[in-house]
Image (cartoon, rainbow, N blue to C red; front, side, top):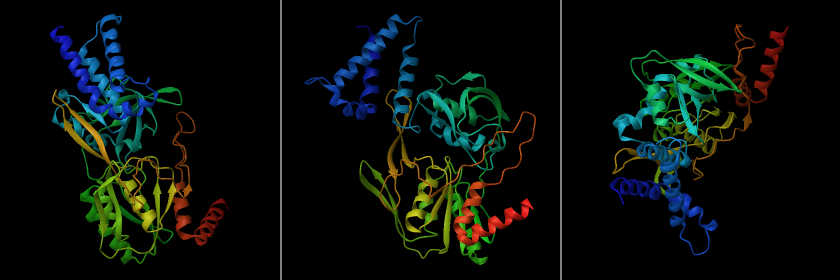
Length: 402
């Protein structure tokens, strides 16, 4: 056996064993009686790799094949796990967060398809032509068909550029769009009044935002609001632990935990008197993710808050970065955060009142689209105000129509 062949088999073994263990065990019920499941899958992998190496129409590079095999394996785990090769450097694991801060876009890859999973509120991308759900076919002229997710994030996070050209597929049509790139900023939450109700706009749940949120909740008390709408739409980044601390402004007691393979490894509680005790409604959408889902779940379960909008993304996972002996790193999910009910937040939160946001597409080419009313916020205000809110809303609509 040649040295390169031995190296190839060793690397194959290292790839398959630790990452596909769960899939392999799940498939044992379909194995032939008496045959070892790992042996079966390893034989298939080895035979496939060998056939591709020897018989594919063009010569193949073992390093490239194995790297893409790792990309596929981690992609099969969840959209946030990733193999990060040594060439990505130490910053490769932080590329996703830097990409969101620079571009306002959260790109994920599922079943080989790169798509826009979130657009940060207030970001430059929010005012661009990019739309939630767009399939990204090219980034800066590079096709994404075999582009690893870390590379896509790295392109969006790159310094020295003011914009980036993308090709997006939307409703079967290819569109060329430009995404502005800005210097990373820490967006600030804001409090405003709508129909006598406090509307708290949360844009991030990073630890640094906690002090600002505390001040705004105190301001809501100073203004004597008895009802509060908390807007978590598009909140893509944040620390779940900061989300639990934010929840402690509204409720006390056990708030949730971090669970790993069915076992609690950390519990989050609040023993302080809540700063806010009025009625709460929470606005969510498909881009409410991670820490924002933790906050929404705690408020729903402990403060009887009603959720308004669309189903949230469904991923409040804890991730770990593990170095690999052959070089590179593995970013993988090793636990999930829960609400007070103890259920891992790995499925989207279902709104109590479902409201679809108005389409963002222009009415016709070359024509400025009308500024749509915020239908989700409007419904949230009706819910938090009860019958009085609905009556006031209808009266307002009648006045405008007349």
